[in-house]
Image (cartoon, rainbow, N blue to C red):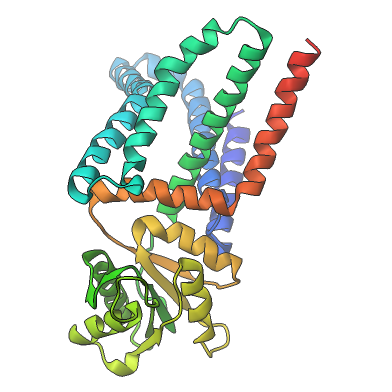
Length: 340
């Protein structure tokens, strides 16, 4: 039987590798990784079963396996509590550093809502003795679990797309996505993106930097001009910098930057902040831009809050298919309770 389990695991590895090699800019990258890990766990269970007689004679090994099992189960059981605490604490920190704004409340709001769902909602569900209350409880529970599952797969896919074995990619263009500037001054967040682009330029000397960003409210000059000045001050040749000065969103960053590319089948690197990278790659894929993404770092307390905002942005891009999945489930639940 373990041979069949190994075969299934091997197939899952091939599927994961195929997705990552062909185009990793999809939730299937994270989903296939999870499936591969589950297949590995099943394969190992079969191996342990086949070796049970040998394990019986080695009490120490059995003890280690039991401890590992308890730690694994405990980690899963405590994960919701840890998630609530991390998002709440980081939510407080981002408010202390950035002030009270609607966008800065996302992390704390997420932790509060998750706490309500885990602690309060089950009580409400148990009190719902009537069919309508039970049905509503199951529908909302499915929506919450589905969104959390999508968030988990989205997070894993985002991490996988940030992992690179090498920085030398024979790139022709390095597109650095803009962010807000203060007057004509580059912010620390934007400076990290530019410096990442400069770093990649050192590994890809034949490439040129495309600084992408228009002029928004409160900005004295286009973002791309401020970005170019910053890069030149850091020692980058002006001939290595191209300015894209019309965009006001990530989608426009990519679309207008693409129009500045005059090479057939170019090798493109997109640079933005790590938490923003995966959504940028999805937008690039929708526009037919084949590229890889490198993320710049930012402060941890800001990352969680911003990542939730990015996830909400992803849901707004793909809301139709998520509504379809939820709608099918709602119809099934209603049908079950109607003909019960």
